[in-house]
Image (tube, rainbow, N blue to C red):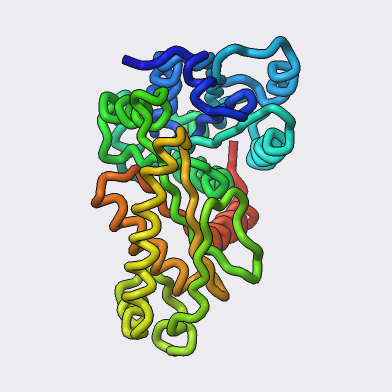
Length: 314
């Protein structure tokens, strides 16, 4: 049984007003997630204009957490406006914000639209696949800022609800979410890391011409890094430490744990180690998201370039 909203707020000692922003491409399950959060005791508001959020938070204190559904249909929605809102909430006293991003593969989104015969909000007079592509490009920078990312491609609505309940229910049903991040030290550490590991001592694929243009998700890169005699011992010790800490943090009521791997460029070594640890923890039953900051920034810049050279017609 789900706990009440006031119980959930009490489950987060020292935290301020909990605000979960729910977004993602149309058809990925945002409405299902909002409904599930409402059933867990959240004050749920869908399609709230961003300009009204400050007034909502400046009003009388809420005795339960808040879930806000945001998508491209919001009348004042824009990528920059949402990112500015996220940054502003992060520095607002007594507010504890989280960005929940629901994602799905384009072909799955297209199939869902074909089944419902709905028009896509970004292509009302065109085929859904055109609108899906536009929306995914628009949301790339926001996806990169997500605290929790759920890929709903292979989830039924019932399974998505169960996933939301595991991640956001009170202490009796909480299943702590884990995010494994890769990053470049040249660009600074990501915000909100609970633990950071430096991979710069490992063998660097950058110096192999055939591997330089690849990233750590490629098996050839991972194999090259694994030839470093220190890689196996390093990974096992990090894994042992992580397995020790995760249950302890979960027992203390922590809902999210973020671990970072850093290297020089954030392309090879940190990416490979993040992938390896994330997949290992997922096999052990942890709810894991793997984030590659520098790769996502690169994808975001490519998307921005495509939008700049390919204007969207109305």
